[in-house]
Length: 154
Image (cartoon, rainbow, N blue to C red; front, top):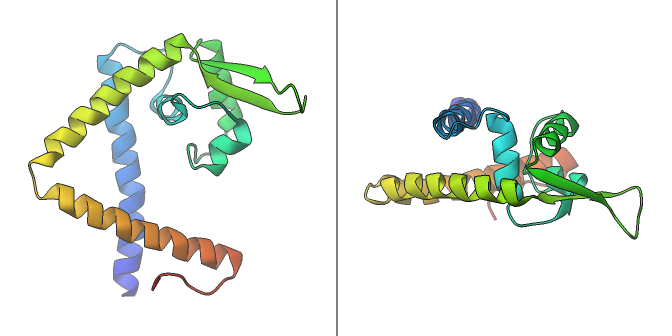
């Protein structure tokens, strides 16, 4: 069991790196040269929402430690607009600009194509099962992080 657990952790990390490479290849094909793959995913995950930087990380839309740098780059390149909150001047809200929304739509079409390519294979059912298993693992790790009893059986 320990081996399967550690293999799964390594596989999740490796898959994330592979996915970032796929995104890099896709934005290169679109001749998007002013942002990188991580920034493109941040942009994609924001979508049509408006949120604070804290919400961006809290929702799991960004997993790295240098979110400020990546947002600054997206703002400089005209993909994201920021605005101070009217109610709390310390808080900054971000949202995609028209340019950001256009790139989001292009990325969405690519991810839709990827999903359709998987539809005809047995991988679709496997992905559904894998997602459920990974959600259980996420809850387990959340419980471990918080010092709670395991929720894997739930």
